[in-house]
Length: 119
Image 1: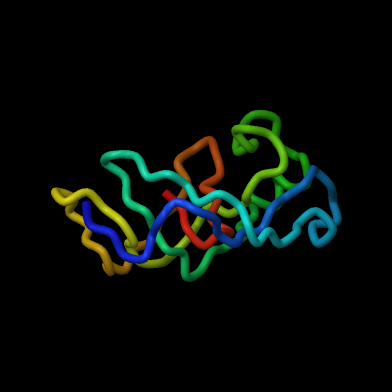
Image 2: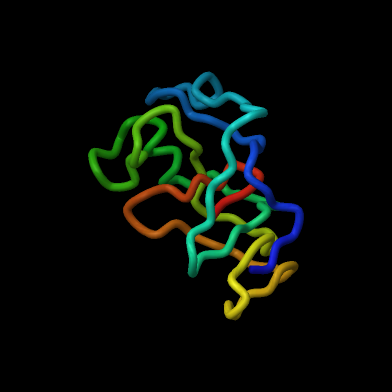
């Protein structure tokens, strides 16, 4: 396994607390959220940028029933379109630590992109 500065522990992220129309009041910074645990076959991405797209805003506003709803309810980390660098990968992965990458969420769930790391 190739690793660059990634260990179990915590990370910073933005959490959404509930549905509502005032998006600014729903989001808060969290400095000690658990880092995701990478599964075999996945990469860990150190996020450099994340877009809060129209679909994310619909979810936050509560205008979705199943499509794009947070898998585990609230609070959750919104954001589905990210760019960053590979921080961890399997040795036989086509991706290597340091590779520049982009990712989009796989329907129907958000990617948790407004965080330091995703997997």
